[in-house]
Each structure stands twice: as structure tokens, then as C-alpha cells.
Length: 501
Image (cartoon, rainbow, N blue to C red):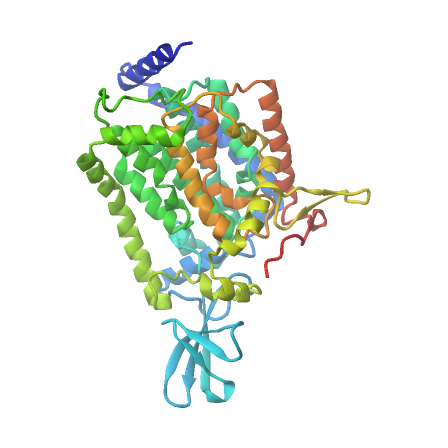
């Protein structure tokens, strides 16, 4: 097929999508039958993999405690937490000289060094302290706790976060399916319904979304809610049609999983494309399907962009982001005297010294995180249980082999650069972060951009034939193993690889 024929075919698809036939009386219900079926199948699969976990809440139900505190008008825990895993801890010291300071003792830089919430470093030996009080906080961004409020109001601290994750997580494959179908209607994707269903099934059961949905726990609750927000954001961002919603999803993503708003490149690119002037001799239109270099393509588009309307549209995206960020800054200031501090600096964990020495984000962590993301493999041995997985998990090529197709797409799309930008933004944050995702089955941080990776697969042009389906089924098998064993059968896991000094 020639370039002109391909572009003509895409324009015909877009025209038919913009002028649909009148709806029949039952067409709305009929259109929802397949999404409902997808939800029911995924819900059943997730419930089955959860199994006995459904009997009670997980041990790490931090969001339930945060929701309980909000309902009672508190921003901190009432007393001590049920355990010491990933809670922020602040001390209030009343000194003999009459001063009162809040903060935490540092584990590096000398003895008795106390860093206040204002950023001051004070030398406070024990003999100077008249009275000491401690307060625990949930440091994880708070939007999932807001979603739990009505349920915690009914069931209190017994609310089952495992069921919450499963019920919410089963919606995510439906959103991914809608996104894939939307790409077809807009002419960006040439996938058949069958191929989109295979890709949806791969997302549901052949990525780390599977094991992340079935175990509860604060970290995975954030991932499950975050995936829903990224899928809604992608739907809203397409062709720059729902800018306020796109911005709201990014804003709520910030108070769910802080790397999510770094995917703003998708909506920014779509806004720029929406406000392109017609091509001229001085600014010719590039062929987005067959011109491979990315930078020359973007450079040739820039002279045709109408700056003022594009800027106004980006303000529409920014408005809800700024609103949510403002609420978060007030929340942080009240708790930690710093609008930019969620509380992770004060995590009472054994690697607190690492955080205090290198910070939460540092080049120092890239080599370990890159290895965990791409190259971690399971260990095999002749002794039972014959297979063991590091607590850092296994890499993306192991959990989702079909993602390897992204390395050599067969066709190009004008949407692909912006989806790629949406991937690279949060990925860079993850690579700089002090934690690899440990403890995990697979690289869970990838869920911040997995939706975009699936969309790129849809645009890439590789046929979902027998080989691709085989790779999908391998991924389903790998992730089924993770969903069943992780957190249950610790004989298959070991604590090793990549300590960061």
C-alpha cells in the first residue's frame, strides 16, 4: 500500500467515526455487553487468584488508616500503627531550654543530629531533651484513601482492601479495551476486534497488573487506582478533546502515584497537533507513517503550530492539576511544615540512612533500577523448589514478552511520539528513585505507563498471529504464577541482588 493510500484510508476511518449512524433504541446496552463481559471475566479471574486473601484485609492497609483518620478529623494515626512497615515517624522534642522542635534524628552525618521539619540540622544529645513525643503518619499520596471513605465509614478499620483492589482493578482492562477501540475509530490503529481483545487479555492477565490487583496492600492499591487514572487520561487526551478531564486525571494521579503527571507529554503533543496550520512550501507536512527520525519530524511541525490557542488549551489542562496540587501542598504543610513533603523523607524503615544520604531521587540508583526493570531473571536449580525469584522481582521482558515488539514497530503513527513521551516521563522518575519496587514479583512501577505501552503495541503494526499469541500466553502463565505465589509461597522468593550502599 502506498503512503497516499494509507493516509486516505485513515482519513476515511476518521470521517466515519465523526459521523456515526443514529443510535438504535438498544444500541447503548448492546455496546456495553462486551465491556461488561470483560469486567465479569477479569473480576472472576482476580477473585480466583486472590483466594483466601479475600477473607480479611491485608496487613498493609495504610489507606484504611488514613481514611479513618480523615473521617475523625485527624491527619495522623491515633497511637501506634499495627506494625513498623512504611509509616512516617515524626518526633516532637521539648528541650530543657524551652524550645520545641519537630523532625527526626538522622542516621548519617554524626551522632544526635536532629533535622527539623523546617530543614534545620541541630545537635540535640539526649540530656538536652525534657520530653519526647512521637506521631505516625501515612506518607503515601492520599487519593485512594478518599475513594475508601464511604466504605471505611461503614466498616471502619476492618474494611477489606483486597476486595477493593479486585473490584477496582477489574475495571482497568475495560478502560484499556475502550482505549484500543478508540484508537481504531480515530484511524490510528488498524487492529481488529479480536486483536484488541488479545491485547486487553494480555494487559489483564499477562502484565504485572494481574498480581498487583489480587493482594491488597497500600502500594498496590495506589497502582490499581493509578492505572485507572492513566487509562482515563489517555482516553481524554486523544486529539485534545477533553482537556479538563485529562488535567484532572493527571492531578489526581499526582496524589495517587506521584510519577503519573510526568506523562503530560501525551496531552501536550495532542494539543500541538490539534492546532497545526495547513502545510505550506516553507513548512511542509512530514509523513508521520514513514519518516523515521523523531526530532526532524517534531522540528518540521513546530513552525505550523498556532501558539496562542495551543497555550490556552494547555491552561485548561493545567487548571485542575494546579487545583489538586494546591490541596496537596496545604495537606503536606499542615502535616510536615513543607508543601513539597508527602512524608517519605520520614519513613521509619531500615534504609532510612540511604534516603538521608542520597535523597529520594539520585543518579546513584539508576544502575540498580535499570537492571531490575529490564534484566532480572529467575534462578533455577536442581533442588526444590527449583525456581526462585529475587525480592526485586523479574524484568519486563519476563513478565510481558510481547513488549519486546515495541523495539521495532512495523508502522509509524503520528500519535506514537506522544505516547512514547508519556512513557519516558515517569520512567525517568522511577530510574532515579531510591527504591526499585522491592519487595515485588515483577517491576510494579511500570504500571504507571503500562497503558501507554499497550497502546503503542496497538499502533506498532505487528500482527497478533500465532507467535504473538504464544508470547501473550507465556506472559499470562508467568503472571498467574506471580498472582498465586507472591506473598503466599515464600519458598519461591529470596532476598538478594543489588544492595545500594
